[in-house]
Amino acid sequence: TIIRQNNGVNVDELAREMQLAPATVRRHLDILERDGLVDHTEIRKPTGRPQYSFHLTEKGHDSVPKDYSRLLNELVSDLKGITSDDFGGKSGDEVLKQSLTRIGEKRAAQYGQGRRPVEAVTAAFEDCGYDPIVETDDEGLKIRVTNCPYRKASIDDEIICTVDRSMIKSLLGDQVQHSVEMSPEANYCVYLLATEQLVQIDSQALGG
Image 1 (tube, rainbow, N blue to C red):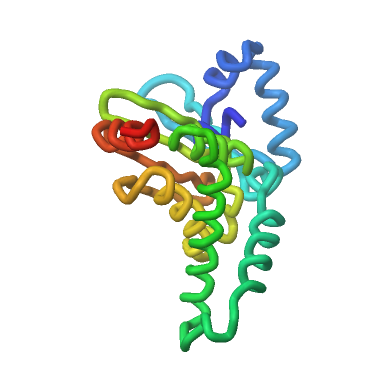
Image 2 (cartoon, rainbow, N blue to C red; image 1 turned 180 degrees about the horizontal axis):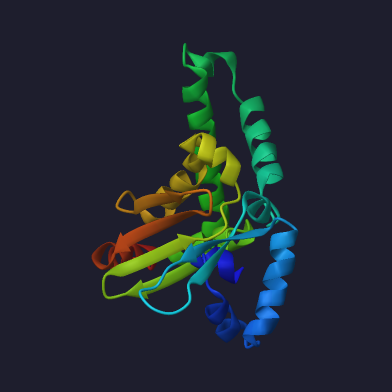
């Protein structure tokens, strides 16, 4: 989890975080590398011995719980409710995007009951295994999703992200900025909302 959330760490950083001796951490990393869950890259320094940054492999990312079954059930349920008139000459891509949008809106309604908007987003992400890191500062709100439940699918086609974008839009409005970081080592999303927008949304949620 530490390696995944930081998109790569060295032995000393892991040792401090886990309060273990560096030699103990190295033994654990050797096992993870042997099993194909972790790999490393060399970081050269101007002086001294080189350091190594450890990151998850594709197999390592796959070992983290994913959420494909839930989305599949939601997608099947939504598509079964579509009538022939609803298609109206639409392409498969358009039909799929509309279905994923509705799923996101339903999730927003489900998790928004009795919660403030940011709490609802956090609850939805936590419940679905996204491992979100939520931070607020003078600039506003930052939500970093460190475990994409649809990693492989989203690498092939970002249309799968429509679910989350729809949910976020329903709860936090159109002003949320969304960026995606994809690489062989990582795949995470960052959602940003400026302070003034956050205050406005909270005010609306509390009845003005």
